[in-house]
Length: 280
Image 1 (cartoon, helix red, strand yellow):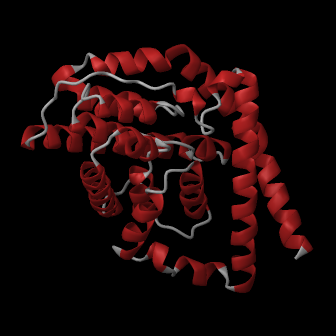
Image 2 (cartoon, rainbow, N blue to C red):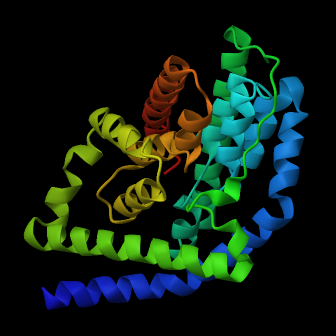
């Protein structure tokens, strides 16, 4: 047990410097460009899904939340909202960077998320979603614990690094205990790596409106316990706190459920498609 704990601590500590540097860069970008990106999407009109998917892939704690507010105020279309949700990367990117994953693979993952967001967004708007008139009511995003924007760039980056490091440590402990008692070969044959079932389960996990879900999904993939298609289903479904904010600010409960169902369905299908492609 002590060997498992020591190995998990070492694996986690190795990631901390990379996580901190990544979060410093992300916090700087968010403080400098977050509001401008949201304003740009508001003015995008029919190009909303394309622009939303492109800026949504940039890891920011508040952009998916801003999109939820913009949609609740009928400032953007449903297609644009779904495009942003699908492209949102949450904690996936800093973990992949800190694990020194190939930049080519990272670009492929981000590229597929952007393309999936654009394609789904335009199809949804063409089929029937129209921009509705309404009053914009963008709430203060920094009040949510997930963001911590008001704490300043360095302090917020340190806070994010500490939170995600704890998540990674817990996940490493669990995975190492499972590997010790079950074996890596057996673990790779579990449901996460099975066609269709893996995508269905991972997509459901991705819907959890918390950074922990993207951490778990990415770590499972890095450990070989989840295949590439299943990982993509989970990452496509994950919106950070976007769904949580949508359910809070949009008073149409039935519509919220339909949006969640639509996001889940697209994510599962997207994971199945990408599982057939030579991307991962």
